Image 1 (tube, rainbow, N blue to C red):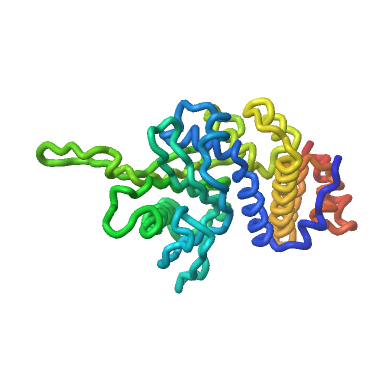
Image 2: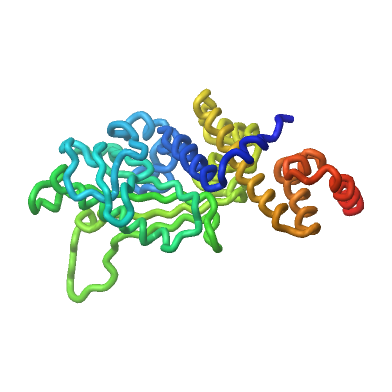
Length: 325
C-alpha cells in the first residue's frame, strides 16, 4: 500500500488544499474528450451526436483557463473572438475570471454558429449567495461582452447564445446528484405572438450537483464527473471506470491529474480529522480513527500515526477498537 501523504496534509492549509483541488479539477475538465461529454449530455444543440464527432469537429479555438475576466467594461483587444485574454478589475471583488471558456460550433448547421460555454468548478459550498444568481450574472456578462466583438451598435440579432455550466462536487443541502437548467422562456401572453425561439433563447444556466454516490448512479454525465472529481475512490477504480465505460484514454497527463486529485482529497480528509482530534473528546478521537481506517483503508496503527495520537495513548485506543469489532 502506498504511504499516506501525511507530510502533505500537515504542510499546507486546508483552504490552500481546496484551491489546489479546484485547480486540478479545471485541468481535468478542460480535456476536449471530457468537454465533449458535457456538451452531448447538457447542451441541447449537441444532443444525439457522437462524442468523437463533437471532440473533433465542434471546438472553435483553444479552451481558455482562468484567462477571461468576468467584470470588464472595455471590449477585448481581439475583436474577432468572444473572450480574449484581456483582464479587468472590479472595484468590489478585484480581478474575477471565468474558470473555463471556449467557443463551440453547433453541428451540421448551414452557417457557423458559436456557443460560448463557461464551466465553473465550484468546490466551496459555504457561500453567501445562491449559485444560480451568480450563474445569471456570468451569463449576462458573457452576452454583454459581445458588443464590439460579435455585434456593433444596435445589431442585437447577432448575439450568440451562451451557456454557463456550474459543476458542484460537494453541494450543500439536498441538491446532490441533480441537474437543473434555467433559461429564458415565454410564459403567458395576450393575443397571438409568434416570436421565433432563436430571438430569445440566448442564455442557459445549468447546475450539475454531484457526490461520491453519483459514481453508482444511472445518469452518465453525473457518473462521469463524480468519478473524475472524486477524492475518496481509489485511483485504480476511477481509471477503470473512465477507460471501460467512457472510453477515455489514460494518457500520462490525465493519469497524473487523477492521482493528484486523490492525494489532495486525502490531505483534506487528514486535515479535517486532525482538527477533530485536537478539539475532540475520547469518543471523537476513536470515531476519527475508525473513519480514517474506513475511508483511506488504513490499519489502526497507520490511522493513529496519521492523526498523531500520542504513543502513550495508542494502546488504549487499540484496545477500544478491538472491543468494538
